[in-house]
Length: 406
Image (cartoon, rainbow, N blue to C red; front, side, top):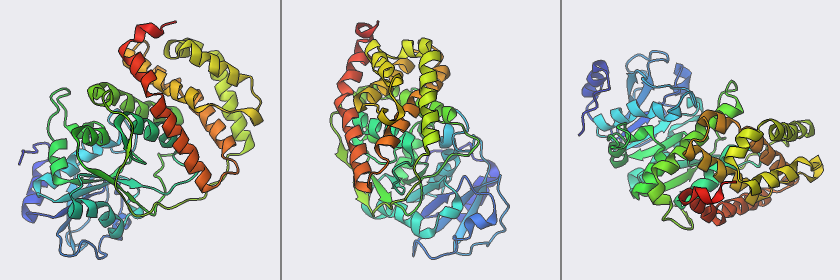
């Protein structure tokens, strides 16, 4: 077993006193004892369970939860969701190292609110690992027409188009791991000289050819803190997504089409409120203002044809405001290419995408105003297919960027 020297000696001593554990549950967002009110419930019958929680939370006395072992560990990386360049994945390191040391069969890192977890939910996440040999398990949170739109409009369909796997939440912050994937993620990547878990875990598993699956859970999509503004969310998430395109170019340039991944359970449906007309108006006005004020940045990132399509949008009334799928996909692909070319500061570039994203949200919300659940699912499927059909555009510009210069 590889040595995990980044764990402090006191943590290693805790682990040595425990010996082995079959299952490790990591709770980076743990704060108080109430976050573990569910831990003594029955679950994982016949298996030895270890719960790892951060030292930033309340100290729990030994034996607080008789059926589980507890390990308290210090966090060396930013622990808040989307809090820094490594984002939420910085919180995986110590938990995976603990799982490796106790030679666990499966490990779950639960980054959402711990009070939303339960032994039943954690077991749902890890049964495909324990019983069927999957290496990585993604959750499917409750679906909603206006929920998780960054994921629905960019992350999910772009991952599907480029990497060929139809994963609902490829950047989910709650994941289940096999022991073999834990070992791989803790290896040093020869290109970055960092543990692989500091990268985007989903694409690491996909590009390695490991079996992945997803599980429907009865919970809402986790939300970032209210203090995290939209531009910061886009900058961090898209920065990770676009950086992975560069890292995995040889893989996604060879892939074509997409396939379903095994799915267990049925995802729930959540009803959500429509966006108020005043809010839609504000989104469209933000886009119109961006067209006037961000011309220099957009001119670097977007092709002339894309800019012409956006100009037409600026002249539409709210009731008629619609952004075609092909236009939106080209916007996203153009920004991915500009991120690669480093023509301007990457943070400035990605922040300049906010008005364009708001334009897509306004268009989608107007179109889905009276849509049924089936209607919105079909709508997102059409968007995903547009990402797939436009992939040759991304490939051509990636390989021969000079052909598309104004």
